[in-house]
Image 1 (cartoon, rainbow, N blue to C red):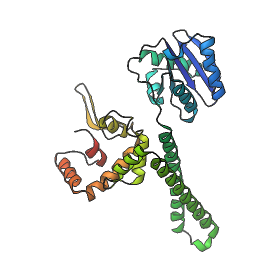
Image 2: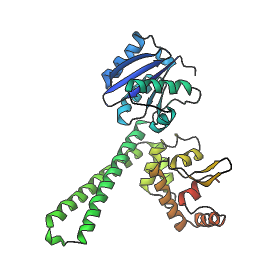
Image 3: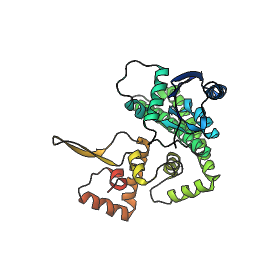
Image 4: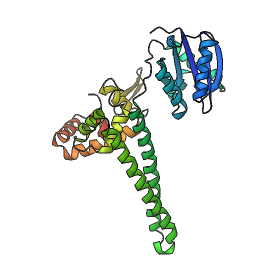
Length: 308
């Protein structure tokens, strides 16, 4: 699609700074529902922007950019959410920081890469809900593990009867975390069960030996119900299981290895299910042993999920 305008938006907690290219017009609004509507009203009335012919670009900032993304999608205006690291590395050498300057650089980024950019499409509400619930679950599990570790270390030094309140409070916290995690698990399963397509995908995933419910839920959410990635190679790259060469000229001949720019959670889950598969699935075990005999690395998710 040919765009007549490129609109860069710097999103912060409370404000939105906007620059329109090639006009160079700058405006600012509040980052709430009312402020977003006023901002777009100004673009049309004061700056004569045809919103359907403009490409909106902004950095993905989680909750801060969510309302803006939802508004744009509901209105049918093309937009792209750019990962922060990608944007940062594309800006070159910079000195200082200004929200207005950043908005201009984002618009410039969109203008220069207009042929490569694929407009963002938000996933279904159920997928967004699953992602939020899984993120919260991970935090609760992490905090629960901290209390468990604290009690374990304390038991090696003091008796429970020496300081009963110390142990009682932490055990109560662990019990509370258990209950909240169970609530989240039940709600995640309810979301899946209320959507036939998600339920079918869930059933297919857990039918694989060694794959549990949490892995299935996470894979559905992170892949947007298996619509986010065009093929398995792109997902392998995203999950950090695809190896990349490290070479330059004749002097640099580094090892071919996976990149640290990856979804570590997805890689961890793939590692867990791979370890289970080679123990309990004869076919996968034989494949793993054959790959090792060929000189492949022992990295479990890489050996089974990377490209040949």
